[in-house]
Amino acid sequence: LLFSFSVVSVITGIIGYVGINNMGNINTLLDEMYNMHLSGISYVKEANVQLISMDRALRNLILSDTEEDRQLRINTISEYDRRFKEEMYNAEKTIISQEVRNIYNEALKAYSDYSVQRDNLISVVINSEMANISREILVSTQITRQRADIIDNLITEFADYKEHVGELAYD
Image (cartoon, rainbow, N blue to C red; front, side):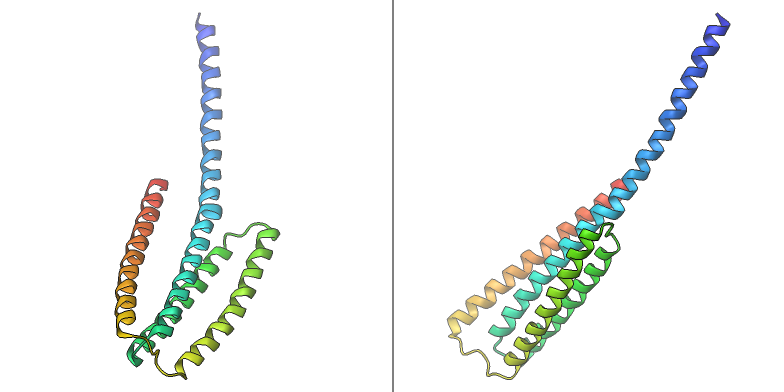
């Protein structure tokens, strides 16, 4: 009876050791998945949001009716450009395959081409007269822009909160 109990204890100990060891492996794989894949997806999506926001700011620049508004839009475009580059830099750290690296490099090349064209458009807008738009359209555009900015800020806050909660749950 004592021998049987000892054998069962040894078997239980071995199973416990294997289970704990495998839990460590699962945790390591979870760390890799989060750090290399999920955070990479987040960086790429955020870069895309910055690109879309930059495009919206560019359209708003075209519709600007004052020099102050033009300068505000140019500064906003510069900030979105900085954020886009930052997110892409962070995303690069998560690349683990050559295929994805090739796509990343193509995206950077396309962005470089876009940046040249965007800067040319900004120069054209700066050197042209203010938009000659009816007051009714201008007011409607400004109200729509303000509401879109509110939505943009709330969605950004929501996404930041979800990322924060995800990080807390992960830790």
